[in-house]
Length: 92
Image 1 (cartoon, rainbow, N blue to C red):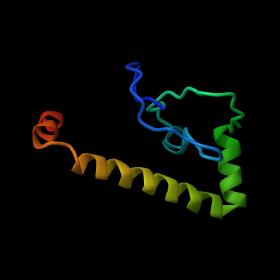
Image 2 (image 1 turned 30 degrees about the horizontal axis):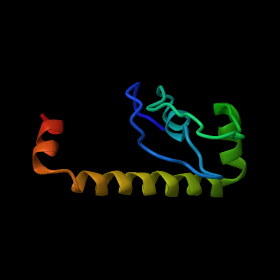
Image 3 (image 1 turned 180 degrees about the horizontal axis):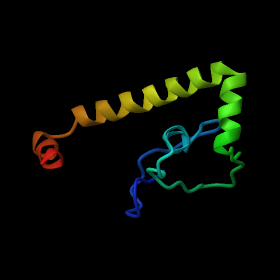
């Protein structure tokens, strides 16, 4: 998964992992592009179908919250490991 056209990987996803959840939840454009490194099977779920699924099976929403929380924690740890000048540069 890449955040822009720079081809800089921001994540490597494995079997049974999801992507695109931010765009389907907040109705904003996607924040990254994804490219499969090997033959891959994916399931595309329309926003309306996703909303119905969440309504019928609320535990799925909880699972997605856990995924988002895990990813946010990873990014926080990465930010903590940035040198001070990198952090300042990104905040400026």
